[in-house]
Image (cartoon, rainbow, N blue to C red; front, side):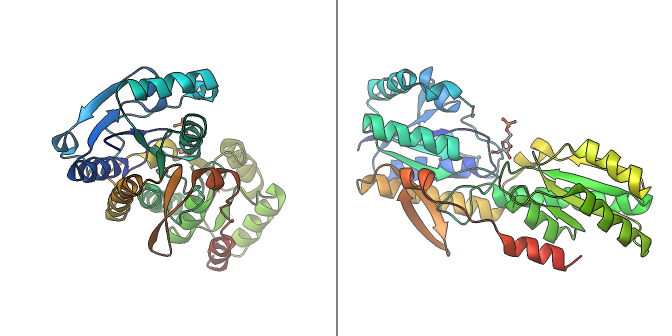
Length: 320
Ligand code: F6P
């Protein structure tokens, strides 16, 4: 391997820049040429590729987002588009690719490896913490801190006004962010995507705690479970207290990466280059029990599951 490329794909996550920097600098140290692909798989298809130097990645370790840009590119599902992308890589003499992103990005890397024999290594970059084969994804811890800061602020105003606040948290079908934020934010109710909820039971619980003297409450809920604004109306109609829903949304994706995410991203980036130089391909990097590990990317997508963290829900429920 002489020339490697790197791209970030899917939703951006704080720490992606630290990962890019680590890949670029460690690859250069090993005598490789490094190319940055701008705007994910879409940019690859459009040949948006530039050679990077160690100075291309100066002053980015502390920056959120990804300086390479990212995109969602559903067209990559078309095998003809993937063949064109492989040709673009070959036209630059690039012989390996590091992909930083979530499960969609991994699927892209898997297909490039499977269909075109192209050595790809995946790094888990998403705030959702929903990637199999790793305890933590790059960006998750920062997004969690952001969510908790927002919950603390909502607590101030909900308590002053004796209101009920519903806070919608990102994560798609994974509730790690929701449940961890519920514990750290001291929230009264946590609703996880994996479990769902019974609206009637929730309202009855709120009614009974308000009857006992409670005068405000925080409810955290994973996105896509229900329409939180409608839920606010339904709660207010029954309980009587004003109820507001706040969708944290993309606020959770931005911001300065935490030290944890910078270190995780740096370690994973260096490890990815080492794996490529050892001749590994079609692997994805993770951290499990504090150790860097790698798994077959195909296995990770098709067979490995991330178990629901029932213990987090249990702790959240016990501390109300
Ligand atoms: O995967 C990261 C994530 O932020 C999810 O939590 C969320 O469902 C989705 O991306 C939002 O995607 P978009 O930025 O395309 O609206």
